[in-house]
Figure 1 (cartoon, rainbow, N blue to C red):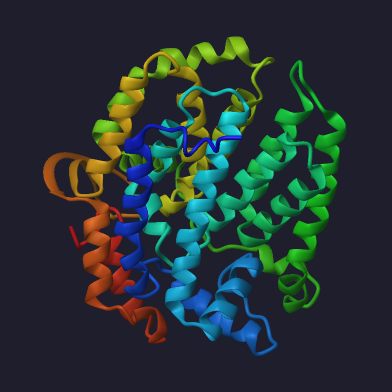
Figure 2: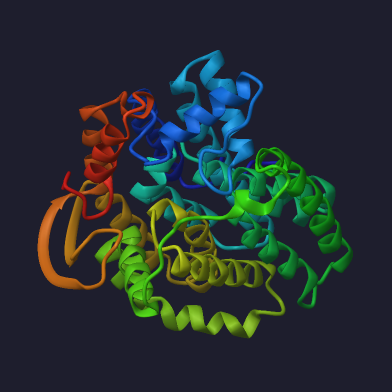
Amino acid sequence: MTLPFLSAPRWTRLAAVAFVAVLAPLCFLGPGTDLDTGAVLHAGDRIVHGAYEASRAPGAPVHEAVTGVLDWALGGWAVNLASLAGALVLCGALWLLLDREGVARPWLAVAFVAASPWFQIASTSTVDFVGAAALLVCGALAVRRNHPVVAGVLCGLSVGMRMSGVLIVVAIVAAEATGRDAHRDRALRVLVVGGIVGMLSFLAPFLAAHGSMAFAQNDFSTTTPLSHLGRAFAKNVAYVGPVGFVLVLFAVPALWRLRLVWSDRWTVRFASIGFVLSEALFLRFPWKLGHLVPAAICLSILLAEALRDRRVLLGAIVVAQLALGAVNVEFLRPDVPNLAQRAEPTLRVGFGPLVIDTRCRLDDKDAARSGDIGRLETVWNCARPWGNGR
């Protein structure tokens, strides 16, 4: 049997090699610019020494444990390389899943995911976005290959790595339980096994909170629904870039027509449900762009299904995201980034997110380990969307 990767166009294979070659050196530039990296490293260190202290509510025990072991055994660079390995696993599993489901040119969907500078930043940092998503995609592949127990374990571990993954698990189960090719028994097994593994993963945070649900409480401030909608919209545009966003709009009619094959296409059911649920959660918590990785994966599947005969458009979206990493066009400027109540129209061309993030990491590679929240916030404010590192 020929591996799908080997049967892909040569440029795709070269792109995969370039992906690793470009991103691997970034793994040695410290834990990254994410605001939670210091807390994750501290939580991992506590686990290695036999205690538990969540990095933030509700905790990410699987990711914290992996971080602690790798950091203790090899160093922080190993944690970042594990994120990069997770990105490769995610891309490979997505490719295999779409190839199995008969999606034309699955490498274009994979390229859509991998081309995003925000995905690349997460793939070289001490964060849980990519690893959790990789487990979910592997879980989806496992259930479609009729391995529901394995799928349940993978989905449960993903939830233990990042609790919001439960929404994609719901999408997997719902897609499997509906449609003309429904397999409700498999869906039930995934749900039961995933639920058990997920709950066991959060046993440590539960016990650390003295047997209460206090560990799940968050302090994310809320404002008006219109402000949340504006923040979510602006950050969705920032994720794909203004050029990429306009190109995606051209695909909307084709995306709308996918409703006609809802009952026949597992991929359409899964990706549609997953996208809607992920975006609904982001509307409630419109903060980090890394939170949009699951939505981007679902969108990549929908675009691959909708643009079967329009590969040039999907390819153009991929190219636009690649360019975004180096050059960004800013058309909106919030009054207070991450706490915006309004935004002013603007037009400014500057460096892209990947370039800015790399520069900000180089400014203070040890901020996450310093224990100085001021240093960590400086790095975060430098690299975040509409930050001062632009």
